[in-house]
Length: 162
Image (cartoon, rainbow, N blue to C red; front, side, top):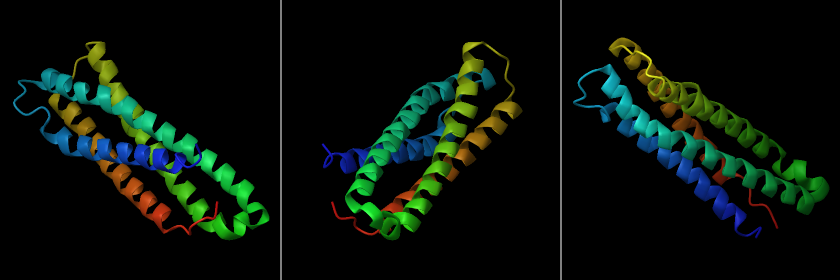
């Protein structure tokens, strides 16, 4: 099972990154041709209902598999753990925390808000919807950049003996 964890960890990371890139690229054109703000919002909500659970779920898998691997590395390396991995791991964990915060802001802070407004039939105007979509788009691109950088830092970490 421990040999499978790095694969699951990377797979979940790439699922998260892929869905975020897909969402960032699809969002601007998702409501092309919609008659008004309410129908535009309905089209965005279809995407957000899939993106939110998928992104947060895949990040949960990344977090759990990563924590398990760190625990086994601590056990394997003993007192050399901090010397060999301390600085690199601290940077990776800082970036991972940033990714989780950004993803939560996009999926729950803004995306879920739009879904709930749609479900509740709340009124929406074009300027308000455009403003929210701009924030979601900026949040997605910030998340994508932070995720790509975190993956880059991860790949540059020193190989750890098992």
